[in-house]
Length: 306
Picture 1: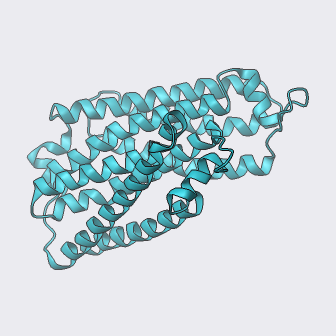
Picture 2: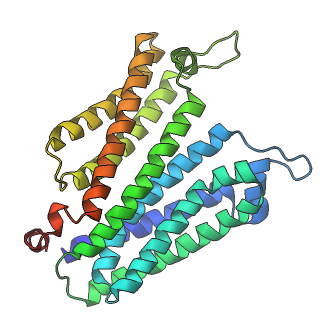
Picture 3: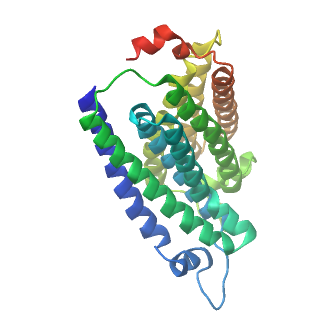
């Protein structure tokens, strides 16, 4: 267990570095750089398209959520002062959310939120790095004991609320990129010369599909893992349907590109089913945590998880 925890922290540190480099490459590291990302020019500013901004929000929110839920339970488990660890974990989640959604705030309300983006990103990265370093030191020099159930519940609760925001962003992104009109979805993949819409290539569709199959599968798996511990009777059905609807939604774009118009309807149905099921799973996890009914909250399960 100790070696596994060290590996988790090391992988988290590697992601931390890559994420910082990626953010600097996209946004830059100063107010001027971020301003140019959003407005292109100081003299003739023009805000970037909402489609491009919402996609970055979608990616940043996804990666920060999984990063937080990956290592913060260890931090809460090992840090001696649990109340302080709770506060730091909440602040890390808060700054990660502010950083992720600030693109929308800049688009809607202007340049003042560029400062929010810079401050939240810097705070998020500094605090998460400190938490990672402290966690690593505690793993090395402190005996690993039982799972801290209260800490796990706390992280899962924040992750679940954040996941609802992610699902909302996912809904907005789908609407802005494809819309809910079957014809527009068909044109998105196959193009339309009269409307000057350029279609997608098979290569780009496969590239996006490969990325989404992995990332979407991980997200559904994490939510489903928490959902298993709820009291809901038909957990298996909900989990299977959420995985199946997610896979169908991802694959349907490939068949639309092949000219099968019927898959535009299949894509819409599977997308809404996926959103509904994942929202239902998330809300049920939140409900059981708040009511203290998750199975791992019992004494027996906390011992089994030791």
